[in-house]
Image (cartoon, rainbow, N blue to C red; front, side, top):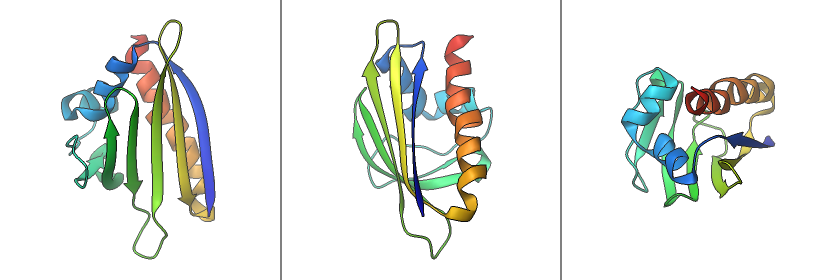
Length: 126
């Protein structure tokens, strides 16, 4: 199992980025896919037509989101923590994920960078 951490600059305020990550209609806009999401701890969610599924654990408005992402029945829990830090002209987003299965690490982190983080950046760049 491996961990992954990435910092990304997003040209939007922490409030705007938080809304983009926690409101189902906003998530659907920047992912372009079906989403099931409720900004409430202990609720399950589905992103990208079910490609990412998990459970919401914690929300700190405009600052932090903690989720568990599922990797199959036998895998250890994978915890995703997204922190938003105000920057001069936008938001510095810190994405950290624990317990990514070794065999999935490269494909999964490439997807996070291109689609999850890249999709968010593109959404605010437009």
